[in-house]
Length: 621
Image 1 (cartoon, helix red, strand yellow):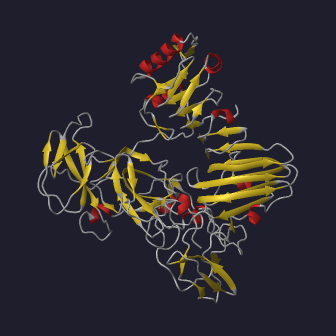
Image 2 (spheres, helix red, strand yellow; image 1 turned 120 degrees about the horizontal axis):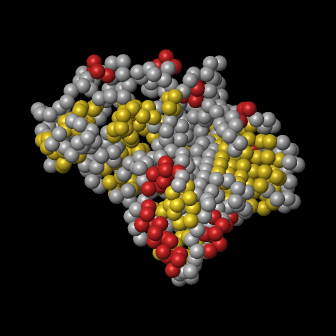
Image 3 (cartoon, one colour; image 1 turned 180 degrees about the vertical axis):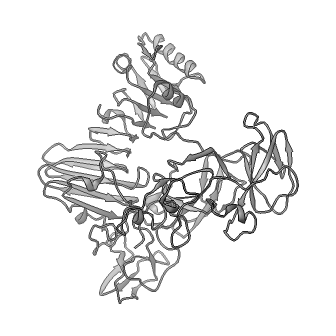
């Protein structure tokens, strides 16, 4: 069975779940079979009320949720009951949640997005704890502890326990929130009590508006450096008669010296490498916000010559590119099958470096089946032959009700009845249509682990190109002759590319011109194959520019000879690299065959990404 449930999960206490004395550990999938699931990785429970209540009666229960968006209702009972809900990643699993509790004490969320619709505790107080989660609007209970979370609700709901959170796109009525936190794109009310009580806490304010003291409205700070922005904040406080305390750290004294202000240090609360926030952290030996990774921004742009970007000049099929946006065309009906992709240009990583995380931020309606995923969760074409052990999804070709019988049971397209999936059994290879225009699709990934495609290599083919014709359909990288002088440029097809830029050559234009101290390096064919004659000898026994699938928050791979210093990643039986998005990766890394195959963080010197967007993925049920 193909699924990408992880080889191990870490719970709220930062422990491997199999090292904890859970009474029950169950796997759940949005597209598992509703009747025959048993809660294992290979045959998970369907997320339905009766199954989520499995594990009642006291003790600790751990529920592992696949990716996707859910509408969940949890009714539990049992003295001293703990429930841990762990997703595939803070942006990969989203639950719209309601809780009816008879005798419930602790519920802990990790690695998911939560939008609470209805929370009722009938007999006692429930303790809510969060780690590495997105907490969205609708949550109306006190958060007892939040750590490494992206919080989009009013800060007054979040208690004082916890640390390293990011508050985003909300109103901060009081600075009663956790230490080492970031406030991003918020309206912030500042009083004398805030300045007096919380000036010793480390906080970062990015792209915020402030209403200080008796000011009538929210306005941003003026300035473009750490010093000028802090000076404007202090000036506005003192103009309102507020006293701004001074703080000394490492022999440096500043008013509100543990607070830092900027208008562009973060993306979704993640700090950009080299930004004001990042330099502030390094100076004070701290980490702000919900993620420890300092990111390199990959802009989506209309400019064709911007290094390390996704632009209109890149290979693109079916997507519209705007400034900082990708979207399906307006004439696409998302209830019909549609897909598109776009590739980035070739990016230099500044030498051989690890890729710790790939963040993809967007507002695609996942609950309607529109997602960004390098590999589809279900097959792209209907099947007529059923394979034993595989899960299948029932749909119709005309969006009308349809039903089938398989192995003596009836299944239909209805999302309301939640009986639209089944598992193949040995000896029964066909189904019978009962009504409607049935289509049956094979489920390719029960875990719904959204992936991104990447190419990563350690070096480029030898040869510094300064003249002659280029090869069509190959990527070229603009490299400086000396890293101390990066002013050189290459003009290709009337576009001027700076050092560290890259471009794809077309057959219509094979010439170029160099200005200054730089040269070109040939990268790879846009449709690279191992049989390509060009540079074939170079790529032998090296990491090759194959596309591989990677889970954004788990950028691991397997290496040849199980050695991190090997020249190349290990390949699976299908010839593809065994990265975290490969169907066999977690089985091998988790020891399903009796031996744990060691995994390593992907590393390289040059990388290229591909973003895929598709419709008709599994819909919230």
